[in-house]
Each structure stands twice: as structure tokens, then as C-alpha cells.
Length: 463
Image 1 (cartoon, rainbow, N blue to C red):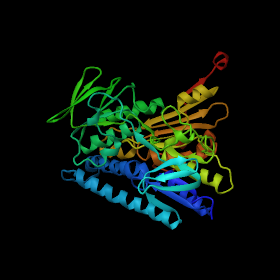
Image 2 (cartoon, rainbow, N blue to C red):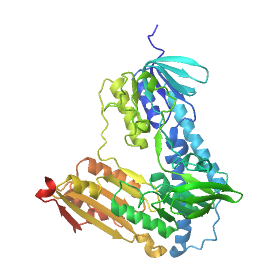
Image 3 (cartoon, one colour):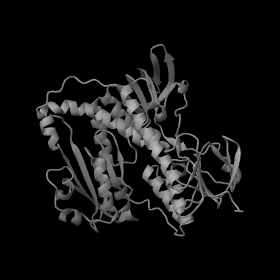
Image 4 (cartoon, helix red, strand yellow):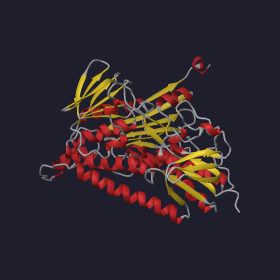
């Protein structure tokens, strides 16, 4: 008789957990996965995928408006929120089914139940009160939206979990926050026809991104009709017959239909029983792990957003794969978190990889900046005032490209491919030696010849 019921028990069937389960099974492990909601996790069910579908929907507003400049006569367009929500749900359901089928094909046992840790090698399934023993436990429960600020009436607010399934599109919405989720929904909802206001404690959006990109995206969103309230948050939310009345800390009062809180996500560890078996958590409840995703309890590991490392789906997938190769593939594998490309799917889109200008100037002795802003070819006939912004950050001593940032159409696609070049240690001379593809926006990255600025630290700065 086997010492344990399974070799690996995974709590959570999101991107990281599913990848880990499938790869572990391919290594010959007996694997069981428990999921209490829907297979696919945040990204598939109520995150990246449905969000991107809504982004696509919102961009048709610009396409219809631009068509006249290219000779098209387009009748007045109308938008049906319920049809979009139904289409989104159909696709999400299809993808969730694929995830489920792939687990089954891999020989993984999938249980629709909440699971909690009973002991260092035991998990309890709450659906039928079964106790499962496992040689190794992987926590891959992701994150959950936080209801912040906790002000009177906060119970009337929604989060990104609920926005996807509202029966009606809000005519007026206040979005609280300035990160990925806040700006993405602000940009898409204003194009779908909502009156959008963003309120945040900070003085600008997207903390941690390159300053030039932050400013340019903010200005583009204002041009699209988004109203910003910087340096203030709601102090109370009151429900009325006509909707919600929001009082901001600066005294402003807003009448809206919905308030969406997008002020961050916390690791989803509450009630899992981790603390009682000795798993160390940080101040916000994230599982503390080492370079191999092992917790302070040797038999328990964690990957993805629940560890509060880099909260991106591809990172969770890579962590899940690396964990499995380490534990079941006899190949110790660490995840490289340097130069992770990412995109913010606003309109205009923001793609980035590597260091920001601020980070580069803090870390390197000499930093060169190559930058350009231009009107894309499409806008010359559409009449749109949009501009693209591109920026290369280069080590002035070694010529190595430290960071690449782009704001404009297809920025996410560019960031993915530019990530390869940055990861390989490409130099500015390599960009210069690459033939341009014309006419494209991306060709600007290989035709940037004139340095916009050079920043050099003196001896005192280096001390």
C-alpha cells in the first residue's frame, strides 16, 4: 500500500496550479487538484481573458469613428452590453472546459471542492469531508480583490470579480485605484459609453511604470473622456433610489451607478489552515517561499499570486512548471524574474520590458535615453490625434539595452518580442543593425539614432 493517497495535491486550478499538476503527472506523479469555483482561475474566468475580450469590444468605437477617413460610410452604431457579457461567458466556459479536459487527459484527478490543509501531509475536502494524504502539497489559490478603502457604505461597491457579469452597463461609474485593473476598465468603459471617473490616493496612474509612459497614458485617457481625481479616495458611499452618491475625502460629491474598487489584490490564503501547520505568511498573507517555491514547511509549496512575487499569469505558469521539474523531474529549476515583459491593455496600449528610466539611473553610472513620439500612419487619414511613444533605455558604458517601453497600438505584441532581445542582452548596436519593416510603428525601435538624453553619475553620486 502506498504511503500517501497521492504524490501531489494542488489546491487551486488556476494557471499555475493546472500547469504544475499536468507536468507532475507527465513525470509519473499521482496528482489530485481541488477547485472550489471554476477551473481556469482568475485569468480565464474573471481576469485577463474576459478583460481582453471587453477591450476588443471597446475599440470598435474608435474603429467606427475612424472608418470615414478611409472612405467608409458607417451607420450610427449601437452597443449591447448583455450580448457582450453573454459572448464573454460562452468563451470563458469553453476555455474552462478545455482546462478541465486537459487535466483529465493528463491523468489528474479533479475534485470540485474547497480544500484546506489539515496537517503537513493531509488535506480535507469540505464537499464530502474526505481526508487526503499527499507527499507534497502545492498552494495555488491566487489572489482576491480587497475592499479598500473600508468606508461607510463600502458594501455597495463592486470589484473586478463582479464587473464582468453586471446585468446592465453602468452609465456612470467611479473606479477607485490607479493600477492595471483600474486604468484598463476605465479606458474600455469610457469607449463603451460610460461616464468614467478614476479616484486614487496617488498623483498619477500606474505606479512603478516609466514616468513618460504614465504621463502620456493619463493624457490619452483624459482625451478619451476619463475624469481623474488624484490625491483623494471615497470617504463614504450612500445608496439612493437613483444609484449611489459618493463623497470623496476632498469634499467632492459624485452621483454614479456603480463604484468599482480596484485598489489591489491580496493573496488568497484566508481559512486554508496554513498557519496552524507552520507555514509562514507575510504581512498581507502571502506564502513565504524560497527560490524553489518551497514554504517554511518542507512538504508544502506555493506558486502564483498567492506568493506575492510578480502577479502575472505567465509568471504563475512558469513557477508551476519550475516547481514540478524541481520536485518531480529531478531537475532543480529557479524562475528568472529579471526582464519580465508585460502589457497594460488600455487604449492606447502600454507594453514594457526591463528597467524604467528612474530604475536605470539609480542602478547604472551612465544611462542613455532614446525616445520618439509620432503620429501613426493610420491616424493621418482617420484624423485621430493619437500619438505613439517609444523609449529605449541604454547602458551608456556597455551599450546594452536595459529597458524598452512603448505606448500605442499593438504595444503588448511588441513587448513580447522585445522581451526576447532584452533577455538575450541585446545592445543598442544590435537594434541599429536590424533592418526595418516598413511601414510599421515597430520600425522606430531600429531607426532611433539620435540620443535624447544622457545621465551620468558623478563620483559623489556613486559614493
